[in-house]
Figure 1: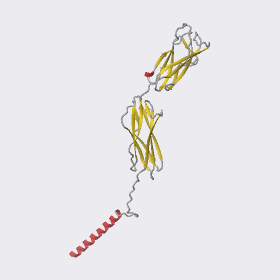
Figure 2: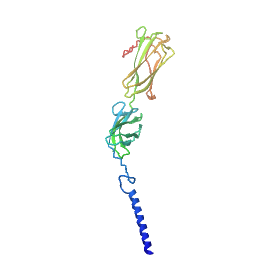
Figure 3: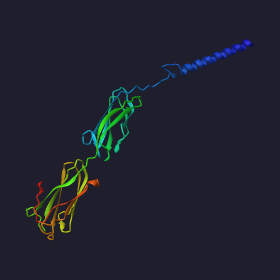
Figure 4: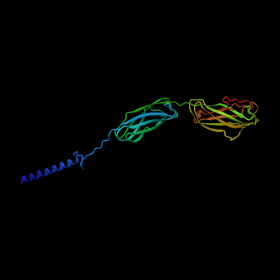
Length: 286
């Protein structure tokens, strides 16, 4: 009786071991073919080359107040597989007041042998100071590639101020004697020049005149000029005549109001034009 029980127990144990061996062979055995094989996909490491450059509107490799530029990031896939989910992070070596840029840019997937370039816009507000800033760019992908920081140094220029002046004026009169005479219609040319070091923006010129002056022609006394670069000028012309109530030698009431995008650069100039006096223009504006 005991021997039979032992034999049965031995048979059961043997069956269990056989089943266990089959199960282990099915799930664990490194069989290459068949239902029980285990396949592990390993992404090959990327081979990316990364370069960083900078360009600005003026082309002097510096960012001035109110100017825009771009950090240019170029990624080249030199590997034999597509680089997945490529992205770049942009940082600066210090905080700069008025400096704006995106902290991260996505390249998406970069196929083997392809070059992808992205430009990250950088802008400097009017309060940016003088000095330098170093942009640091790091690139990575989901294949495991991660570049070290690649840097480019950019100069910073504080705001350069414009200075708008009435540089010259002259007349074209019917009698051709370069004098404004009572009731004589004349064309006055006023030259507005930027003698400062900065760009003048959204320049507007308005002619302010007294009750003894009548505007002729189109009647336009407000002129939208726009931008004036340092050392450059714009001319405005308008037609008028002065009443005989203004006596010989008296000043004709004509003022030129120069307005810029920033009120601190506005000015008003009273033209020294007198009745029956010769008006000579140094710039041949007659």
